[in-house]
Image (cartoon, rainbow, N blue to C red; front, side):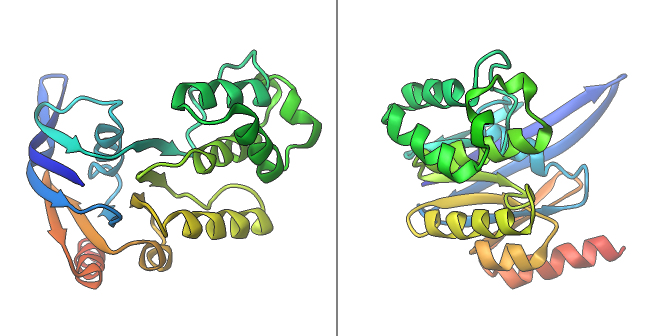
Length: 218
C-alpha cells in the first residue's frame, strides 16, 4: 500500500512560485501499477522522486508499508572508480541480498562482458544504463519506479528488459512514466494525470489516457 496524504510540492524560482502537486490524496493498494501521465514539466519526475524519497514534499506525506526501488535505470549512484561488479556487490549489501547471487545475475543480464570488471568511469552511458537496469531488476521490491524502462540498449536488449519487467510485475507494483501509450497499457492498471498542479486519479486506465491525450492536443 502507498498513500498520499495532502501532498503538495512547489518550487520558487526568481521569486516566482510554481505549484507542481497540489493536495494529492490517494491510497493505492499493493501490486498496483500506476501510469504517471502529463506534459513535459507537469511534475511526473518530481512525483517519482518524492515516492523514491530523494526529494522532499513541500507539505503532506507519502506512506508505504512495502519496499520501494530507486528509479529503475538510474545510474547516478554508482561510484565511478569501482567496477560494475564492485558497485553491484555494494548495492547488494545495502539492500540485504546475496552479493554473489546478485552479481551473477547482473553480469549475465547486462551483457557487459569483461567491462563488468572494469571501473564505471570507463563505461558509456548505454553501458551504465544496462548495468543499472540489471541491478534494479535483481533486487526484489514491492514497488518499482520506472522512467522509460525499456528504452536502453538495442532491440534485442529492450525486448529482454521488457520481458523481465513483466515477470517482476507479477508480484510487484510500479509507478511508470512513459510517452508510449502502448507500453502504458501493457504495464499499468490505473493512471494519474498531472496538469497545472492538479493530479487526477483514474481507476479506469483508458479514461486516464484519454484525458492525457486531450491535454496534449490542446
